[in-house]
Length: 281
Image 1 (spheres, one colour):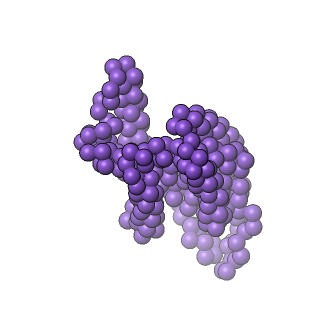
Image 2 (cartoon, rainbow, N blue to C red):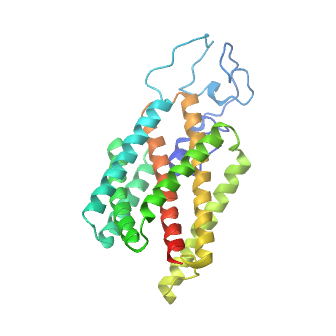
Image 3 (cartoon, one colour):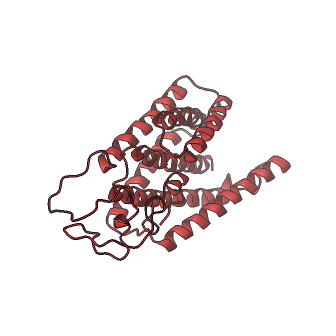
């Protein structure tokens, strides 16, 4: 199934349709491959350039130059490290929030550029991480001045959500099915549209628009945002798992890191806003 994350969606990390659209009929395999002989096995598709044809012998060594969990972890660590380093610089230098918003727009442009590229660009992804980090450092510092400790609480909350979703995904408590994906997509579209309407109303009439940024309604909206972010994490884990099982090129690990970073930034911002509302009441 496809992720709502545009990074993975364009890559076709999908067990329903095969990698990059290779969705021909199944090709039986033997050996110890856990997917062998499955009528829905997308890894044995005749057109899949990353599938290993023939028999998979017991104890066969892993292929070189392909995505692994270790490669995804290392790339994600580099990307998040760039975010944290840039955020620290913005925090220490007390960067103005206006400049931070400008960097956020640059990060958005770089993120969209990478999302629509055919191949992963490590330089582009790390550049996005730096500009996103500058924005996060500026806005975190500004909110932390009004709500002391909000930034650290948001970091802890984001880490807790990541660990919790990863545990439940590994234990198969969360199962990423087609229905689950469709629900998350629909909820995300509704969430974004409502946020945009709130912004337009606020710009036209002033104040807080529909009231989604403070008070009880703001708390509910923030909680929904955190839950949606957690759902996106589950989708991202599924796409990484499928990419590793496909044996996609190692360079795709950068895309996995990029997608996970996007989701974690979303969750952090929702926590930051939610904590600011709670401390302000």
